[in-house]
Amino acid sequence: MSPSYQLPDLLSLCRPFELRTNPYCRPATIASESWLLALKTAKSDDVLTGAERASVHPAKFGLLAALCNPGCGQPQLFFFANFISILSIADSRLKSAQGGGGSGWLSDIEADGVETLSKHELFQYILPDLQRLVAKANSSWTTRFTQAVHSFHSAQLQIVSGQKHHVIPDLETYLPLRRDLSGLFLLLDLIEVTENLTLPSMNEQMLQKFTRMKHLALDIICCSLDVVSFNIDQVQGNHYNLISVLMTHNHLSLQGAVNLAGSMIKDMFDVFADSQISLFSPPTPPQPNQSGAFSLSSSWTWFRSSRFVDPAALSVPNLEVGGDLARLGDLPAYIQVLKDCIVGTINWAYETELYFGRKGEEIRTFGWVFLNSTADNQGLA
Image (cartoon, rainbow, N blue to C red):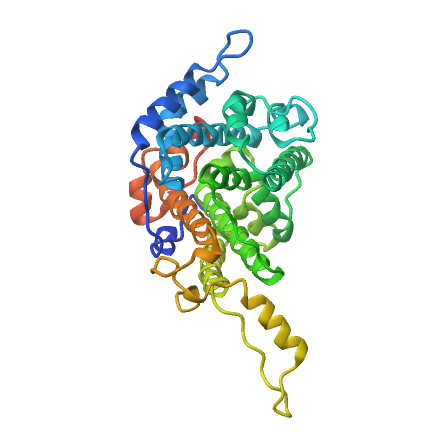
């Protein structure tokens, strides 16, 4: 491989999204880092390894939580900083796992999502806060959260098995697996219940559009993180990275794979923007047939679907413009959550020292990355 490669300009792609941060970022970060460093096992040993402890402050997990949750209160932000920290450390451990024992799971999954997380070597430490948080959730949310936890658990075990047998999945297999592996479905569910977001009833077409936007948001985040973390992953021998997938199955050079990944992410941004307009646009009214009459079935379908779109939103494809969106419930707010997570994560990637060390600003400006050797690899990532 070439000793260097140039990253795509990911920051320019998310400039249409407002970058917001939580005013409680600093106190929540300090509290969360102290909590992490104080974690002890039942035998009074440190939960984190020496390298993990040294990486807690440079990782800036609290900043990531503040960028993805700019509107929550300090107690909620403290919880999200803890959750994101645990999620990230668990992911780092998984990348170096070579067998089932390295997955972090202490036993098989449980019927309940929260109880399943309690069987993980790291997530068990946020169990009390998690239980208090989800106690107010309805049964529908609990079902979705449990499914997300089980998918997360399954994806982690699949990665460990794939690493052990040196399997590199194709792109179609990798993208949905990467979504589940990221734990972002869990994060979005927790933001939803924390912010008391209520999604409206949606017909099948609208639900498909919403689900598509959610998947696109996660794909943008995951693929962007794969691009910035490739240098670390290649040192660790972790091939579950978009760049490795493209190099292997598309027979591309490193720079060719990075360029293709950048094009894919740009396309995802474009489709996300189009999907937002489509989601809040009125259904297309039925067109007359050759005789000038309207089809009864098409008219009825259009009439039924139109009930789920607020009239005030029809002329407002940009959700940030005013209008009466009451009938859409908290759907616009949920879309804003997706935007916050996208723009927040991509900007954080250049602020944390996990991927570029202290060269984040230089790489943000010029985009050039020099491949690390094994000796250069330290810390969490």
